[in-house]
View (tube, rainbow, N blue to C red):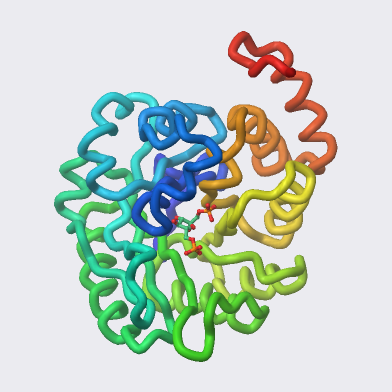
Amino acid sequence: MLPIDDSPIVRDGKAVILAMDHGLEHGPVDFESVPERLDPATVFETATHDAVTAMAVQKGIAEGYYPSYEDEVNLLVKLNGTSNLWMGEPDSPVNCSVDYAVELGADAVGFTIYSGSNHEVEMFEEFREVQERAREYDIPVVLWSYPRGQGLKNDTKPGTIAYATRIALELGADIAKVKYPGSPEAMAHACRAAGDMKVVMSGGSKQGDEAFLSTVESATRAGCCGLAVGRNVWQRDDPGHILDALESVIYDEQPAATALETASTAADDRPDAPVEG
Ligand code: FBP
């Protein structure tokens, strides 16, 4: 872990990473409720919101779409990923080098490790190469730290999530991205296990505004510096509205209810606000 408060992907010590690697990880099914968002440009447009400190995508999307957004969006290139069609023990093959990510304009790189998988050893070794190369470029490394494998299966138990943040710290990540362990106390414990390293909460599948924002409020008050979020932003009809509210909760430390109210008032004043009915 290195101090990254001066990095472009951090604003006032906080980070909101808009993730859109779902086309690879889950498939086009994640875009069925919002078919227009299958066009990556629409999500890059969303990432121009002030609340977003970086957009996380795979290299193919970065190659094709980032050139049009490089002045307005900070880029995080994910260096590995798996499709949902893979039925074996959790694994995440490397598909991009740090060098190529930097060539594409990356301000940070991202890597997934499924600790507890039978492929943990290889993933740890691959991460070593990525982490040390990223140090040469002085760019932050975000670790999608997901304990998952035989006997674990999407485990969000408090002890497991604290182990996930600790693994990220020990392996030299600058930010750990972990699932919410179910309570503010458990999240606080996971943040303590991360030492001085930053922790972001993973957004998860789409929830209602209140439920989502109050989890974000709990996680950030417990010590998370923000979140890495995909579906809870771009699966909404009006992503700008939830980003306004996230900005208030995360940067201005407003309660979720106040943030929602302020965001609704702001949305009514926006020329591009979706028309009701
Ligand atoms: P979400 O906020 O939509 O959960 O996105 C965060 C993310 O980590 C993505 O980067 C990734 O594609 C997806 O979640 C992985 O989801 P899962 O945990 O279901 O494999």
